[in-house]
Image 1 (cartoon, rainbow over the protein chains, first blue to last red):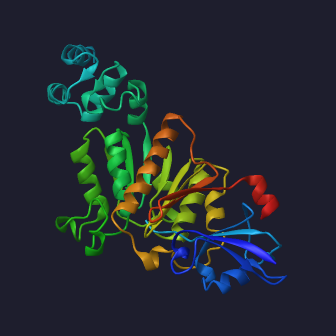
Image 2: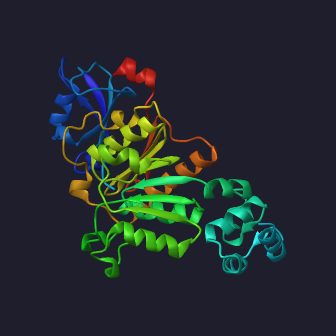
Length: 74
Length: 281
């Protein structure tokens, strides 16, 4: 199945801004994060179809996933 | 008191009170700067230093700002700019909290860091700077780390809290303390070209939502550091939020986080809707 992934801020470096990706049924958000070689502890906000979601959530055909890094500096 | 009121009326230039007159009134009547300013504003005279505010902030609102108290937690990259802008804005009482002294790696971005202030507590430099900019402002400096145990005391009496911290557990502690005291919190965070701002009202759980996936450590700032401009941008947006909250004007960033990307120059908004959080969480 196909999903759309949009990356924000530093996650774009060496990756992409938006990409359509082919994933197997049962793939979770955490699996996609792993495929992108993003350490889970760097994740700030996960939006799935414009709603907040947790990494364990399985993906569906046509899902739009957006990943924002954790920002905490002052 | 009638005498000083007559004095101010006599020295005002239209509805503006020049700084020289404010200074003379302080000397003549042995009053602190703040008291002269408060009397002038009460009489409808605007200290001339604020004359470029007046199409944005009325004389009555300027008095409201003078009678306000804002607690700035963290006096580094964000905090330096926040303090500067609050003082120029004319916020009457500013609490400044930070446990650190200036170090060389602060010089690239922290407004109060200069070769001369290296080794000096950040809150001491902050108090000196604010006194230099606007003597009507009272600074209450605390050279210590913010925590759950002292949060209630540090924030007591504040109308708004400003999150200019650099550690996520401290930010969450500040969020809880503000919630306990029933005061709004303006959050800002930065890392590299990136930043975020949100305003949390009592009863909201926006900071918990923002850091819901956090387990330990720092964010992107750990690898990216922080350049000169990112704290200035984010801090300025925070001060605009504080100003709006103090005046009860405009639409705050409530239950929405402004996500700032200065590299691609993109500004996005993430909504933290209670219902969406329940349904989608």
